[in-house]
Image 1 (tube, one colour):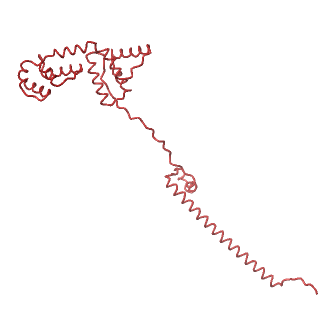
Image 2: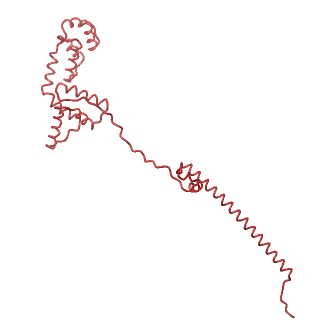
Length: 261
């Protein structure tokens, strides 16, 4: 038996070639479609990405610089990827409340006005709620003349003797009282109060002087004792008229005396 080699006919080879070409064309079409789909998907992804950055920037209150806005084509892409965060605000520190300015009347170191000056200073301290550490600087700033010279010498002497500085208002009052109020002051005031008579004074002047003496001496007594003290110093003419008249309290008695006067 003879062996014959297989050789396809010319028609079959042409058919195979045409089929192969058809397959190649279909593959090329599929590739084109795939590329188109990929490009579409890429555009959609890009659009979604841009939208995501824009929404994130608006929610975070981010802003772009004006220089980037002036370049719409070149910086439109940069604007989505590069942004400036909102400026950081440092937390506010607790600030001490501003202290109110307090103007004190000048004190020249005279004995006769020391008590009045001290009372006025204490009234201002209480009114403006002045802190303890400000009382000494404020009070000493009002010193003039002899008072300023005395305070400067006192501070220098305490430093030389290694004594503690005066930092409290009560300590300064004690030092001022020692300088301006003599040791016999209280006894002298008590004597003036016991010998006080109306004489040529009006009822208002007499009452004010009696109250001033009592206040400076620091007397606290019952009202009936104060009434007896007031009546004992009245002129005989007025006292004879008001002793028989009814009155509720000391202030009522003073007003009756003013009317009778």
